[in-house]
Length: 574
Image (cartoon, rainbow, N blue to C red; front, side, top):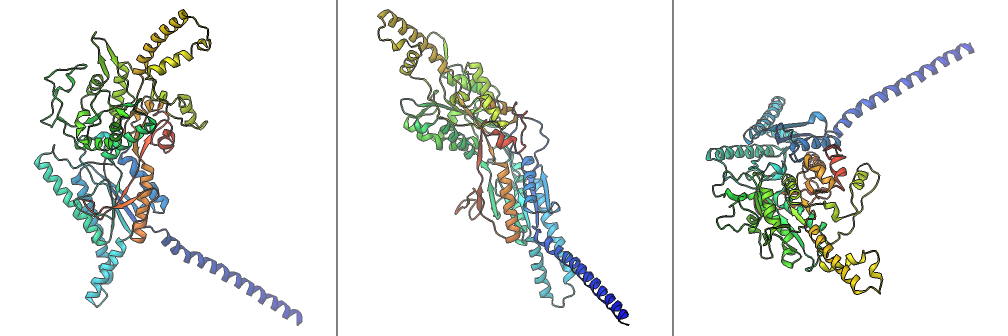
């Protein structure tokens, strides 16, 4: 009997244990299932749709890297890293302002209509009509508040394709017909109205590069401008030449080549720009009447930096095109017709080759040339070689050599910067340097007059030779665009620097604002980027995030362009 009770007791205990384990398993399963919706809601960052102009098929290596085709994938990548799902990100490109405005209008109207229809069906059961309408509006607005539209409005580049897609083009309609202007105005109004409708419905709007007809987005990203492209090149040149250490006794010589595009429609433009000869004094020659707002603004940025150095005598123009009395209104003095393939060579020949009374020619010494865009840089390099200039910008900083650069690319050594040596343009310095290098002859105090005269004669001849070499020394040349064709010359030192927008930083910042707007309805502060709200002008009351432009040289080419995958070692000629 006792055994029977024990046997029954063991069965009861076993059954209870099994039940306990079953409940535990069920509880665990229930916990995982209940956590899933919560986890999904935590990563729901909303939706982002990106509208940009289409770049079209372009296989040329003579184009800037700053294209929408390069930026959009980076923005998508940054959005995914920020937590956005792939199916919540949409991209759309358009080949004209007309098509882009139509695409954006269709998206906004269809999205709002679809949500209204879905919510209307759900609210029909309510007996209170007013409550229905109010609830419907609130519901739609709440859903749309999780959507951000990123728009880079299509722009007419007016021939300035060499500056990429991100630059803010100045307002200039001089080369457009009345019909074109009318169509553009209609498309611009359609774009503004569609974005206004989206914002009123609850969506957020981020604009890249420019605004649209008075519409005020949540934030505008200023990626680059003509002024800033000119300013960074002038600033980099000043740093490279160490002008803060220069003196009036040893000023730096700088020329500016200001490329103007699309001058064929300019009825005031004088075609004879390249018909003048070296040091021509032909009275029939007339300075071309350039009409190019982009170039004017670029010179404004250049002159903002260089003006103090010209005024103080620390800098001068070998050609006399610019001087201490020049103003930003004198931009036409240094302008060239960039669409004429011979204009760069003709202009440099006119500015830098001097003909003496015996009809012999010699080259003028020039420390730096601001060429503004890489296409002009490449033409200037070819022209300088033909004119007899030798060396490279690496000669100005002897610590940088081609092996140093290659070693830096493969991670074997770091590059160090040294003080820029002053060019040997002083006869006294030349003479002194010659004497100290004559196998120790100057250390002897008992030289006779014959040896002294002989040395002086040799010094005079060497001095003359060195003067010619110094006059033909290769200058520092700056540009913009990071053209693949220009990169090999960046590595070998023929071109000192190029400039380009920081594609990676822009994409991260845009993704950050998309996330902030979708989750909080407000913009957020960005790392190393100042967000400024203007009090007047077309950007009044619009927060503007101004992104930095990068100065790219052989020393940072690997980190800025090769490592991110924009170019390869082969593109750089390595």
